[in-house]
Amino acid sequence: VGVDAHVALMRCYARRGDPIGAQQRLAEMESRGLDAGVDSLEAILHAHAASGDLASATRAFKEIGDRGLSPTLYSYEALMDACVARGDVSGIDRWHDAMLDANLRPSCAVYDAMAQ
Image 1: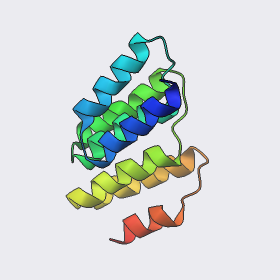
Image 2: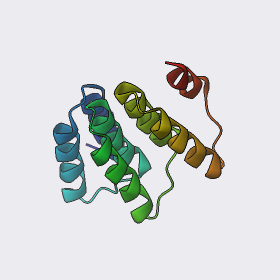
Image 3: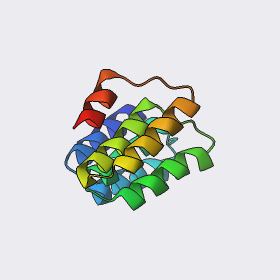
């Protein structure tokens, strides 16, 4: 099983809001010597965000940078979605500003999340 299959499964866990399942898949992937790229780590971030655990999602975001990778628009969208779910307007603004500082341009989905 290659990286793409692992990432696809991790995204399934993420959609269910199951960070433990996503992390187990990441551990299995890495134990097989497969490289965890930004897609893998973003699935972990998204799983935490979908479960409502903004603190763990933020740590996952930091891990992306700690591994020398650059977060994508997907990273910021997941964090802003978690802030929306909590009613954390200042958090939405903070992550939106950070996204712009990273020279990423929001998609319609980002603005839809911000409008909720």
